[in-house]
Image (tube, rainbow, N blue to C red; front, side, top):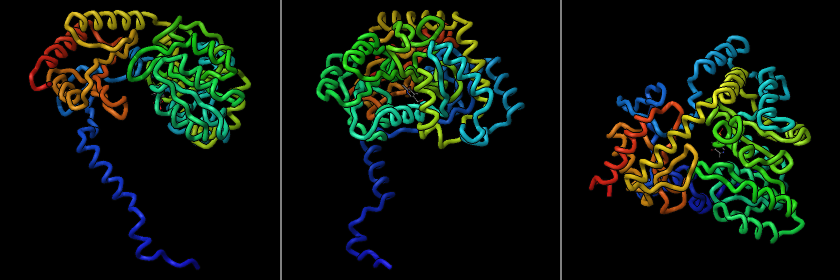
Length: 404
Ligand SMILES: *Cc1c(COP(=O)(O)O)cnc(C)c1O
């Protein structure tokens, strides 16, 4: 039997929990601590937090489908028919008729040959990136891509090269620096904390010219952008060959939970074999697939929701301009207000809550240092009067001396 560690060796080895607690204390001291807020009730765009009703400008339920009657009814009927759990991984009997039906619908909607559901967007990106790329191969990504794309590249053991936000020339330099190395070029379609769009046409041209494979994460574009709400890739007019790996989630505009990857039959069939986050996990509940099928139907058939959103976005941007509020350059329902200092962002969020609006402060490390912001999101559930109320609250909080 091996000998025990000596006392000296023991003293040298850090206690993991103590070390973590120290890191936590440091984050709190920097004023960057985060707090879970308990939402006690939610109806429409309203949320009740700590006993107070606020108009919510924080969620990603852009089309207002999370509590839509048809979506709820499909979820309930799905649970009646299939129970709650899928009982197994997809390959071991968990793949139920609603999953297959949903996948066919998603393929049709996005104009791809096939689609494969995953339990979350995080798992979809880990799965697809780590399946496509091998150790030491190249993953070129926008600096502001979602955390799970970054983690996918790390899991693959790929060489991760990030380029400045939306800078196609810089992306090109990173690809050209490693000629002959298999490469994935990955971007968000709509950037989750900035709301702006990736230059998808230029990125697709670059991927083609350099022999790289383009992956688009359209979590915030699907349902919101493009003809039929088919997303940012459809809005950019990119074919399945030009944007061969399309990923999106159900937890944003579709108002449910889960995600998918769409592409060629060859891609999807291979993911069923190799994507570890698909093979070795319980399939998402079939009732969720039923609810998502209903949500896709509403999203496609009720374009007024996108029209309403577009009206609200215009209203908000014009109103913010009139009041001298600094917005980021976004045309989507994600409308961040630039603040800069993290503590001020927190104070402004508190001041907005006092004025009846729930808007989260987004601070480092979620966004780069010095770029804290209020992340306003709009939903088809909002009325113009809600937007007016937010604009007045923002203007008021912005001027308040305690917010400086
Ligand atoms: C939300 C989000 C994800 C993760 O999806 P989940 O289903 O919530 O895990 C991935 N990418 C982007 C861009 C997102 O906004």
